Image 1: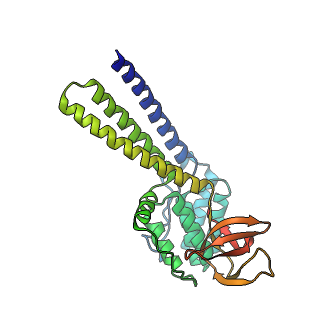
Image 2: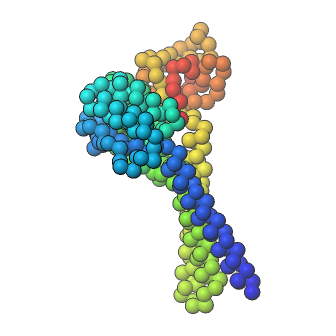
Image 3: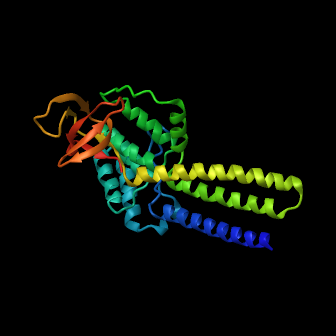
Amino acid sequence: MKKYIITTCLLFIATACLGAAQQENQASSNGAVQQPAANDSAAIMAAEPEQAPAAAETRPADIDSLWDQANTAYINADYRRAIELYHAIENQDLASAKLYYNTGNAYFRDGKIGQAILYYNKALNLAPGDPDIRYNLDVANSYTKDHIQSVPEFFAHKWIRSVRQTLSGNAWGILSVIFLAVMLFSTMVYLLVRIPLFRKIGFFTAIAALFLFIVSTSFAVVERRHYISPSDAIVMNAAVSVKASPDKTGTDLFVLHEGTKVSVGNRMDSWVEITISDGKKGWIESKAIAMID
């Protein structure tokens, strides 16, 4: 009798978890217009952007019109007009990785390296596993003046971070629910099936699924935290002096240039404390950077 009660509870939990995963997936897909990216075949030296798919009738007609106009402007090398139109779509809370990717391409073509790097990073936050975005970001970074040597990172930590960044927070969340359902199902097999081989398979599968559930949940929490509370920013000024204190009269420590990525810490009035990849810290005015959000 106890086994049947446990089975019923596990089935109820699994059904609830799968339902939550489906709702989260729908929310993530409906929350932004997934416009097609420019057909750049991974390189910024691109061909023309792709057109919106036929399923776009679910979106407002004016958005499709803006998208087509932006793509046309990009094809015609009118990059400033394309940027303006891409921003018009973004300002309607219809941002997506592909929209940010195209915006970054347009900024790069227009010679604005800082803005290009900013939008490639925004796109990468939403689609961390996209190789085209990562490639174009690497190309744009090669045009920056600051080539800072990063602090050596422990191999295990670097490997874990690279695995975590292959998927977005939403994707890790959905995976965690799937692993939970697998764990619950395997537990039921172990409790209810009398065949020793199946019980053994159920037991070890449940253990493995539990481990993967913990890992994927941890990754989801970390990625979600980074998305909700961004701490990274891009230098927008052509050159900016980093001060020892949050004051214009403070001692100059070093100079950063457009496109350099920094981590933002403490804030004081119009100043922010930043850290660069080699561990150096200092203060700059907040207007000199743009947050990656």
